[in-house]
Image 1 (cartoon, rainbow, N blue to C red):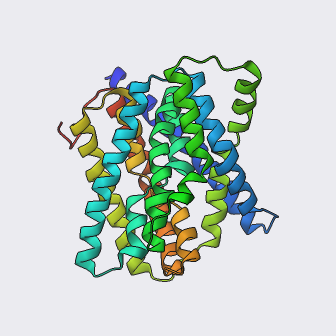
Image 2 (cartoon, helix red, strand yellow):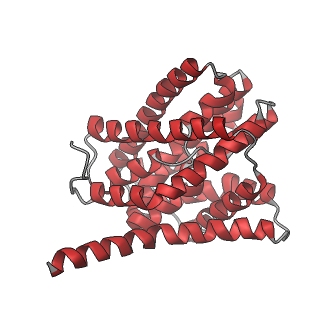
Length: 314
């Protein structure tokens, strides 16, 4: 009986080793706001999104020698997850008589950046981060095009072409496809700058959560729970359809279970799509996922290690 007990103890330790750093840095951002300390979220967000994240994409995909096949598999997983989330989200909103312009983007786009990337890295190391970045690329591009367009009521190709992430993806994949050498000074520079991403995203998330308020708890719970259920259905469906194995399975599951992305509030505020209600569902969705995060990490570890998940049959 000693071995199973030790195994269980190590698994619990592994799970809390994954979630604790994430909680701690988010809490630091939250408390920083409550202490009323200076914090320029717009500057830090722009720096992370427009500079550090493209550097992270480049350095992760080139430094770790990720196979193009793996990148393609993760992007395909994200696209399938987006399509299914859009379909399920549209059905839920139709049955609830809620406006698509306000809530569909939220149901489609989980927070794969602020929470997903740190979790993928802490749970599965450099390999998990590389896979997570590939998945994040598709979600991020969709969020700035489809998500933005849903909220605005029109799709803007020009907005996509202004995203540095798009060019980072093109350069990274070209470098991999043609086996181009990366000069040491470029590799070191992008690696250093990319270090801003994970702590920066978590701090911004914590600070942002302190600023957002719940104005309609019933609606917030409804949308947040809907997002969570969509994540469960979509996550396991993608794993089965694409027959994902190893860390890829764990990363995709975690990404699908992430809460509603904070950027949905930014778009809702910009286009006056009930921003106070969208703020409430983001806070509720994030707290709900945080409540179950140790369980989600437990499932992801089981999936990555090829062990059966109790209650689920593949």
